[in-house]
Image (cartoon, rainbow, N blue to C red; front, side, top):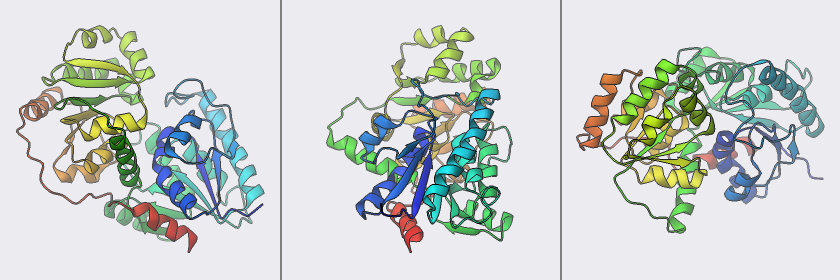
Amino acid sequence: MEKKRIAIVIGTKAELIKCMPVMLELQRRKEPYLFIHTGQHPLQKICEEFGVKKPDVVLSKEPDKETKFWSRINNLSIFWCIEMVFKIRREIRKEKPSYVIYHGDTMSTTAAAVGSSRLFNFNRSWKGVHLEAGLRSGKLFEPFPEEIARRISDKFSDVLLAVSNKTHNFLTKKYPNKKTILTGNTVVDSSLIVYKKAKKENKKIEAGYVLINIHRHENLKDKKRLSSIIEIINSIKSQAIWPLHENTRYYLEKYGLLDSIRKNFKIKLLPLMNYEDFIFLMANCKYLVTDGGSIQEESLVFKKPCVILREATERQEGLSTGINFLTKLNVQKTKKIIEDLDNNKLKVKDFRNPYGEKGLSKNIVDILLK
């Protein structure tokens, strides 16, 4: 069998979404790569939807539901992560690629960074590459455990692919002996590729709606925080669509908050949907209300105002564009922002996307194959 110069370790849907443009470019160039799946999320169906090959290796059984852990750190998740370190190490040693790529800030990312590092492979021939390196919120537990995961992943990597000028400057100062390259964020390509596909399928929806996305565990586990978020969401005067995560529904029911949403005739609750349908909704919405991470970047691609229901964000570059609003969960301040958006008082000005432009994934492949 032909030796694979690149191994890609992926565990979650978000990682696959952002690695997808790189994988498609490798396939276009007929460059073989090793796809290692940790099993953190179910990925088989989404691979088919994106047109990328299915995993060559699956290290643990995929869950039947959305995820194994709901972002919780407990004995089970810690043991699983440690187990993945050694399983990833075993697979990388078999193939001996030139590069091991991992994306973002999940438990799978951390396991890949550590498992492929020099700490466990003294005489290795490969280098660890952190895709989407350098993001920081400045608060260790906002978001949790992602902020910790990305710090560990940067520390154990050899090549850091920075998503913006800000992250590039930070990484070159923090790790002067590592190879840091400004590439932009592959989510730019991911969202545009998927939206192009969605438009071809003639999807239709009425205009003027708000798109809601809430799932951060530090918000869900805190009843006071979640109550504030529901108060904010109930203040929306436009029609709204809310695809509901399984864990979000669980905590809304636990704290007795779900009924107030169900009684709000302005809000339409939907089951969690695939990325293509979600991107189509995002590209055509009035504005976004979210506590997510990647959605902040995607909002910039489609120039959609984004109300961020968090105390802190690692996507700080977006705040300078004038359409990303970090609320710090201040209820009255957030209601005022929403009121202005409902009344069309915000004019979106032209801005340069701090995370890059279309086609940046091809540049990443050029870097890896040169």
